[in-house]
Length: 116
Image 1 (cartoon, rainbow, N blue to C red):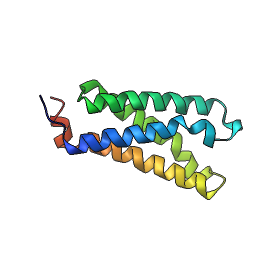
Image 2 (spheres, one colour):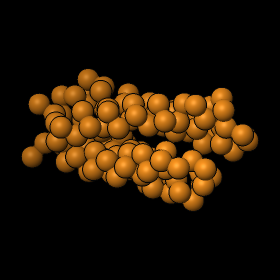
Image 3 (cartoon, rainbow, N blue to C red):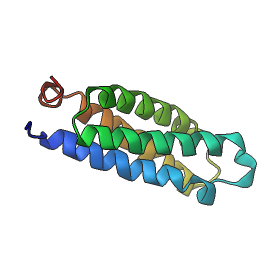
């Protein structure tokens, strides 16, 4: 049985928490957001699948984690500039930084060795 490196554990937990936050998007975003809300919910579900795969050290989960995290960063980035209030900008910053940290932790050399 392989042991899970600490960066992978942290990445899986952080990805799960950020993905759960995505599932709460309909409560936070305004009703005018429309189809963006559905995209964020789908990314939340895929993020939870990727977090489970990271936890179990599945090689495909690494790639799913990277794709889901990049898409979440791209979805949150406009909020850094165009959010109407400070709360929206802070939430966008948490999303961008959080998912960037997940990518960083998942691709560290010690983490990548766990998938081979």
